Length: 337
Image 1: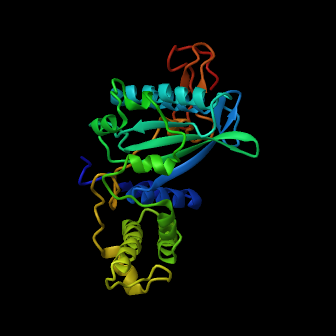
Image 2 (image 1 turned 180 degrees about the vertical axis):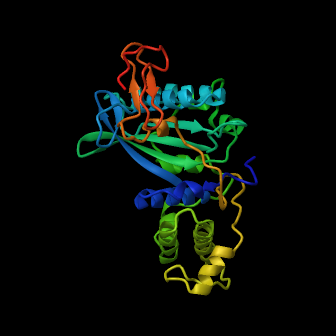
Image 3 (image 1 turned 45 degrees about the vertical axis):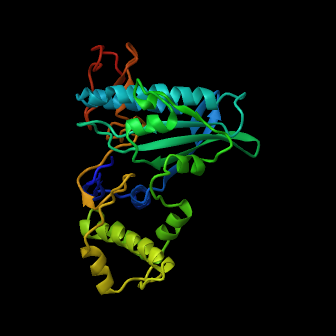
């Protein structure tokens, strides 16, 4: 069963964030998880029989491998190594199948990523649906990511699978006649979830955007973050009250008064529990989705911090603002630092 107290958003990471567009995207993604809706959509191009991120030519599988190597070199905790290696194995299968020119359009691959065990840095529970599409005569792959509340056993039961290895290593071919929302519905027959259309109405409302702007002006302020969560909840709850003919006060499409803003800041944040893991208020826990998030460390005064050793070929990671004299793996002095 899903946890009662669920993973939360680490507002401390936002205090030094200068990219307001990135910050807004983080907030939107968090709300999508909280309401059990489509978390994100990404498009991959196809080049030389590999999936590539839009605007790049490097196979995305290289980013996944690079991210795995970086995080495993940085982290002495080996609890996630099997999961991270499985992610590489699974994406290689997706990559080769969907980039094959003989694969029919609308072919789909379903990749399961349950939360990690105790001590794991990966605490999101989600699944990805990869769909092969075509636009203007060019093939591409659309990735739709959904949050989930299924356990390993529940995934296996619904999908008829016996996961001897981590599920990430075993992507599954999904029916071509169903779109990603329909596949999502099959996996979520026992609880409510929000449609992308309903979420968009909440996210674009004047009330929520007002709360987003206040938080962007004061990133990392817990009261303003909780006001955003409560504002989104108010809009959704009022929609349900209206449909039931109940009394409600609709302030979704106007700027709240001082009293209403204080109410949103001070109201106890709903703990989003149940079969599917939404999220609660501002706290200190944050979690990556994928090893690909570690593929690019920020540059420092010397430039890129990651590079391959010309002797052993393994990835080196420089400490920030420091140079390396020798390879961190084979001790070669030929590292290009």
